[in-house]
Image (cartoon, rainbow, N blue to C red):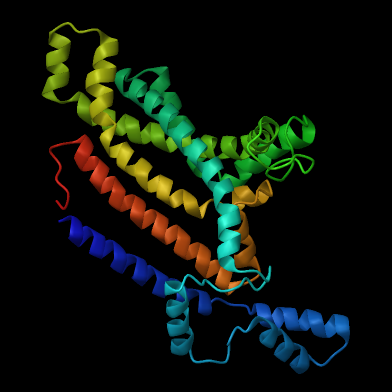
Length: 327
């Protein structure tokens, strides 16, 4: 039942939110303590005085019992208040809204691009079995799977930004460009986003190729493929209309989930390019133990993945009439 799936999704979001709160509160390190040390050393005041000033400045309530902090946290979420970032001293919701468009831009393009390329090559590799293409798909996927995301980003940065100077080192657009819906700004945005998009695409396309190849290989054994070959249909039509159309369903479900998970971004890739997306701020939040910002970004990612998973179930039932929602 659809209602049952929605209720399960809501419960999952609530459970993940609660687990995130507990885990974040038990992480080693204390940003207030670190900032108090800096304040005490730079201003030459006692540490206790600096600690109380920092704690009062941000209103963290670190001395309250954990359950009091939790209920306050939940109540604030229902009021649309995710708290203020300790590091940036502005509401977390403002940081999320400013970073979200950049992450959506880069990852939506890269995920769709890697999916389309991976689906085409994976289908061809399954259709042309025991060829050089099949070996290439396996080798490429193995190499990119074993290569850390940030390493790919660093290599691209060094080659194309540092050595060849074809692309910028950081940022989302040129500082001398006026933001707005104009051609100069759009070109600048795409120019800065090119290397992050390439890093994501290079890392993800191998997985899509393998997934599509495995799905297409299982479809090859179906009777309708054999019947189409016996009828003398052209190979291109069989590969596209019969093989690709039916093999695309499992990877498509994974695509919907990936679109939800993209809200979490990649802290390492965005940090390498100093690209102001969700992943960049998440990396900053973890490094500096910025609890409110961490919790807000965790919540955004969790909601995105769960909602996308729910939509994937609905879309799958539309694409394949044999599948019913709730089964």
